Image (tube, rainbow, N blue to C red):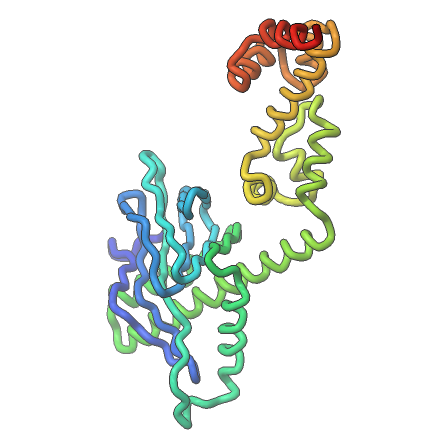
Length: 300
């Protein structure tokens, strides 16, 4: 973030922006960094994270989600979470806790001009509940954050209203990005079962020098999206999946052929017999010789 007069965003008092029969209420907004330590918490309001620089890791239950500069995350109300404080992890991120709150109708506040706010409320309710919505947006939100910082620091006439409108503008643009990317994912998922296609690709190419990048290119998605897909659908990573399949195929060859470790390593896509022995020891906690002896004992 471009620092202005050595100040940054720190909005700890509740503010409201009237929007017809709704109020956009900001309960808390602040720019934070790696010096911030969080405890596991939840609250009655939505929370929006925007990563300005570096990498941020947020824990939801047993799931850790890593975010990079430009990424967004919307956390629904009543969803326990906290930012992990990882030593050496430099980061700058903006947090806004807010709600779109219905208010009693009063004459002048009833206007068709605010129809879009009702649509926005309905849209927010359609997003996953009790589950974060992650968006790799690669967005530079400086136009909003720097202006908010200026308003909070200089406090010129009308600064509260200006700051509130900037918060709302930031929120609207963030939601536009989140909804757009969610819709793109839905379209991709409808056209292609990525999980099945990914496993087919790995089974067909495990003996080659493949990577997360080559898989992503095959699926016409970004490597980051491919990585998230693996974690979401298989609760593991591409690398672990590939190593597991290579080990399985290697075990079959060891048990059914007289091929050398060098030949088997080459056939399953490993760089050397030493790499195969290392993978075997790490995964099975036995040597290749012990595995072969065990297979022969079972065949007798």
